[in-house]
Length: 204
Image (cartoon, rainbow, N blue to C red; front, top):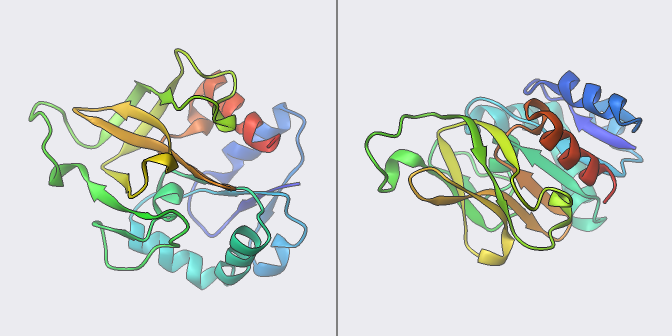
């Protein structure tokens, strides 16, 4: 069973629609008890980092999520701000993140980049997966995904980088540490590329 965390942020129905087409069972979790029996967890997110963390805290699901992911090894996929929440902190705010990935979230404006590149980074861009990562099975060459963001994750450990994208410089657009996965782009808006990635996650 794939559980989509519904804490009030992210287009959760779009993920459910993709999995319906794939004939994979999904459900929504709106409180801690809804997480019982989860075999895969999707943590979506949009908007500001602090607001997303506060909404997750208010949902009452954070402690159960932490137990499932860090103690029981249930695979989790953070998407967009949901990926950023996996880090320890973000330059966008002051609230600590989940600290499931060792790193911090940086503002594109805080690093050198060509002046002509607008922010947010918006639209389709090429994604370059690391060899052998199961999240990108079948997407090793020529995969393109839809982005909309002004912040990116900076990983402390290069081995946690699952894929990169170029926007003035190469930045991590996907991360993976053991059972913890995150993607900065929107697979639910990325047509067959995104469908394949979500299928891969459901089959981990």
